[in-house]
Length: 86
Image (cartoon, rainbow, N blue to C red; front, side, top):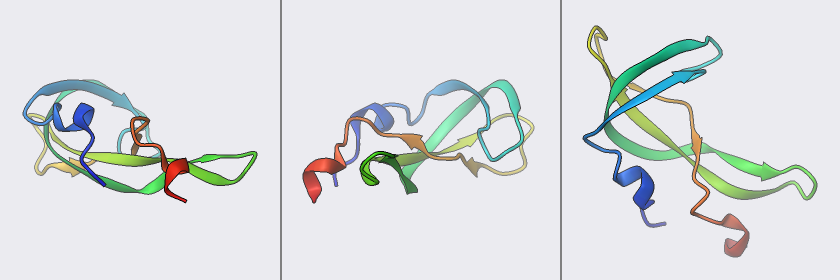
């Protein structure tokens, strides 16, 4: 699969992110540097048909005060349609 443009364009930028960014615990909205991206292991599912419809993308982010960069939870990549790949 080709890299999604909307996520490739985020690399090297500052983004304001928050919520359940790294797990269950809510984090406040803060500005992060986006360092890289990768395909996530999760997929967005259609619960009626139980078929995957979109992959997820994880971002490698770092902000001032963090000891190390961290991968986020998966964001849905709606530009890639898995329904056509059956």
